[in-house]
Image (tube, rainbow over all chains, first blue to last red; front, side):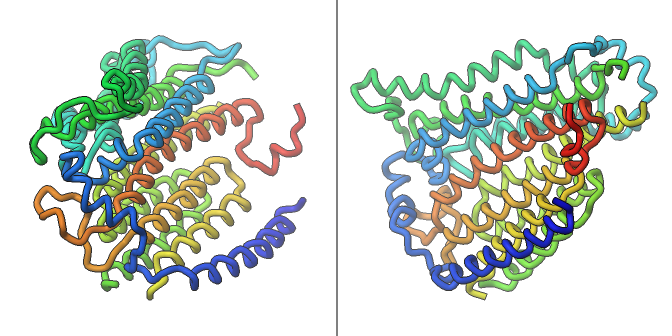
Length: 252
Length: 80
Length: 114
């Protein structure tokens, strides 16, 4: 089908869809007029039941905990997919990182950028750990803090070289971290069985709402998810970098 | 509905159309960064700080970086 | 004005879809896909919003304060992070496709038979 034909067909179909969507708009409640019962109930009872002041994290890791576990596995599967897809194919050579760092001829980052970048790596890691640890108290949690932590290692590559990135992120260690993070979530859930409850029942003392060691199991699940997300994104970055910088193609 | 919400939502709609209309991938990655920033402001204005946090890191750092790396690999192949 | 966020979400969805259908470059397609995904975020958060309400975090405000819906926020926040890893998977596919066929254009890929 020609591109013009496809575009015409799309515009016809899209106008039908747009018509249905606009008709649906008229049936929705007004913006700002929220009717649903669950939000209102959760806002009122979550702090009392979970002792965690961030209701969104309590919903993500406790009230809808199994859903989050499965979404974490989507992430895990995508990381496996990227690793598989970007592996060295038959007929390609892979240069060791020391050889890559020498002969590239790529422009060096300026001294100022390098100093600032390397100086920022520590604070970014600290920020990431802070966001992960305070997930139950203030906006934050495993997912956000994990991505911030992965950003710190990306910063190492951007202001350093590929060699320093490889040294800071040894692949077997990152693999192990990803596995521990992904397995930690159901392991913490199975703890509930020990107390005679259901999967992901809280078994730790709830503590005082607002203090760091509160909300029972939620900070631990936060840590596991943060580890898995950070390691996963670092693995993805590392695979892309290896593919771009180290793997040389076959003769075509 | 505050004026800020109206302005930010209209900006998001306009920038979304711009992201789609730019055909060259590297330029599009940069505009995607701006689009991510506008989305972060939208999420904050809609009182969702958790979502804004993850959108900020993802849209400003992870996505443009990955697109740039993929493009670098493709560029190197077509230069040979 | 009452429907503005939902209308913006619909607009983003259709615009992103148009970009996917008429794309001539696989990487451009992945970026348009993330625009489509962002339309769902705007829609979800628009549904959960309550006028003159605050974020559902009760560290500094007392528990009975009017707050927006936390459930849609939980759905959106995991979606954002998972969306970027799926985009990474698609980018990896695009890179390997380019290695195999030498082009990033979906039109030309149709005619190449291995």
